[in-house]
Length: 199
Image: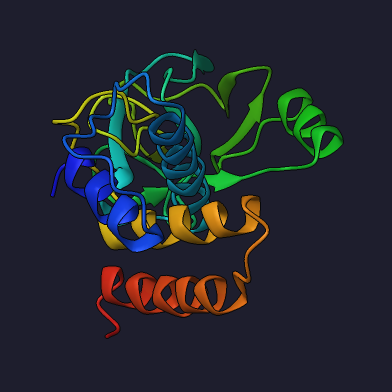
């Protein structure tokens, strides 16, 4: 399904008859619906780790810090960093800055990583083989983090973007949106389970 198809579905559901509406339309109502689609998409992309948003990134060896990619949203929850090579060696996360400062001053055999200042930092320095990093991209539209063209395809469930845009539109118009919002939340849980193979 393309962004154009989602737009047409939202317009139909909210009762706006705008023949041939396009994502790039100058029509105020269409621009408003597209804005709600983008708000919904951003919300949905941040609510869970969608499998289609995972990026595996290889960091070269011999470094103690690398800049985060432009599309970085967050580290994967489980097994985000591991050393390349045998045996499998997970790199543990450190969140507290003071704990990180301690580990940098007193390196251990156990490797650790820490996010600070737009960088992914390692202690001790990565061995020659480097590390594999799994993170969640913020680009929920192919190559972007916003819908901008009719042919855009989404990496998150289109149905959720549609439902999220509908309840936002109803709220903005002062209409009762409780049922639409509750349906969206229920469908979100279902889609998350399906994405994780739990459905």
